[in-house]
Image 1 (cartoon, rainbow, N blue to C red):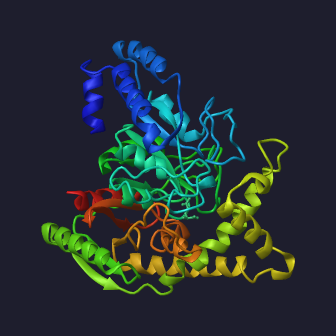
Image 2 (cartoon, rainbow, N blue to C red):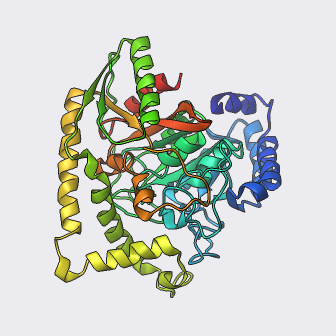
Length: 441
Ligand code: GLN
């Protein structure tokens, strides 16, 4: 879609103004019902008018005229970036995140900032201080999270693509529930500079879009080494292989979902003469127990800057329940007398899981499993904290292991979209996108 649209814009058959105006009008009209966009970029149309001059002179960038939405945890200069929290309710960003800088350099236009779970803490979109947004594909169900608005915004046709952040699944989970593609790159591929962090050793920014090709176009622009984020690096050349072997790890998920996933694996293997095999990855069921102590600890540490002096309100005074749970939990488990019992143990298990996945990638090119182990619940339905955390069981693994992972639509169950998740070795992001392409057809 993006490719065709860029062609139209380049040939003068569609102006940037027209594209952007259409989106802004649609958002103004439909958003009150959907609650996807928190803040519209009031200058977007004006920026598009200026851009059209540049396009006419043939001087515009690679993404000239496209409109995108940004999760409200990524700084866009001049726009309110409140992390869907009362804590930062009126906080206006004073600078651009590296990913934003790169997209603006290529002349894409920010349409607005979108809803998410507060400080990206959540898997359903229900933890926003400004209310959950609607899932356009299944209006009674949660859209997934935490990048709820980024996914719902694409599905609702509010943008050409969007940006989300993924600490333990927040790009892939809502992409799965909203029936679109969500891509979490390898840790270190995309700069986190300008991202308000949830857990710095897991966080990655990535694209959400209607299809894989669109995600790749955006990824190619935002990736790369950045001196302002020291974990970013240049990775080796892409793996190039035609005959793919797929490992299918044993992991707990709904019967119906597994059936769907297996059907897709069978189809793709048959069409391409690829092979697949059931495998057991040791300790794969410890993802949640490993992920949360690390998140609690890093989040607690990261939020100490929100003490009410420099930005907004003191976080403990103004945040919601889920954020408070993590702050108090993080404070508790990092106490000196517990040294080593939780955080260090989680780090030790993280290391073991990384090794187990490395072993698996010695035998298989990619791993395939469900994105989310259960269907999204109904908005308003009460579920326990434990159940809530179980939504993340299949996605946290990629963050724990720092590897790239993508969710691609795999059809519907009872009218609700379901995603299939494909994972590759660290640094093999392009290879992963190639392989995932076969699942999209
Ligand atoms: N649901 C997970 C959590 O609450 C993941 C969130 C995310 O990826 N930002 O931590």
